[in-house]
Length: 294
View 1 (tube, rainbow, N blue to C red):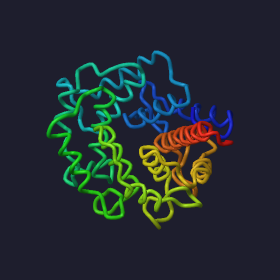
View 2 (spheres, helix red, strand yellow):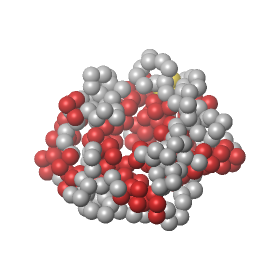
View 3 (cartoon, rainbow, N blue to C red):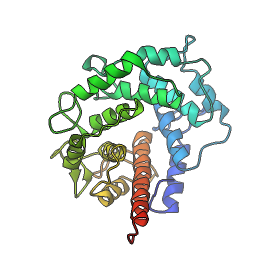
View 4 (cartoon, rainbow, N blue to C red):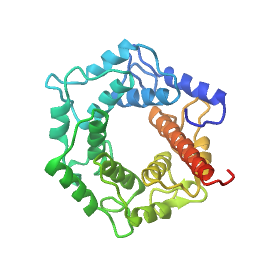
């Protein structure tokens, strides 16, 4: 469970998520009976982190199955990823094998296939390689090497990844893809870029010197740091940022300056808190193993 301020906060967040479940089993953050696969994914992932998943939720499972086509594919990668991973969270699998669709959709990152749901050219490859990891689908041969080489060509001189400029989000996606493909980035340049994105007040920035940061930037910084085995310099600032994004209705907003709570922002907050807890525990264990006083 993510480290959150109080038990009351956790219960309020669980109630916020559950109140956004629609009659047919899907979820919608604005509480109309207009469920969508994205909000359903964010809701289920968040409930899983809070140990509050519904038991034997057949309506939600049936809702998720409606997104798969007869040939095993989905309308797009974004929908397919959310539907498949949501089913996995509920202990289910797609009704038809999606392997062929996943592998045929897997291409090297390019601005030409930048999805409308993301400003990152790495987003689609990240989702697909993550699906392969979830479903234990091997990625071998030319496609693996081509994707790795394409990503490595997109590293900037300062160490970050992205097109046209290096960003913390793109760097997090790129490192995740490399990790999913079994390629471990051992260069110091990526670490240096992440350190340049650190900020003593907020924890992380989207790019060095770019203010203000948003919740997804904190999430990306923690993810990238975790992938490289780095402990963020301003972990407490990250935690404070997330807590300031808590809304009285139990959800989380995108910015410390206010806004509307959504299931997506709530997912980013909870997952960021989860990573903070893991980083702290690993650091404490290393100090304990070396005989230091924690």
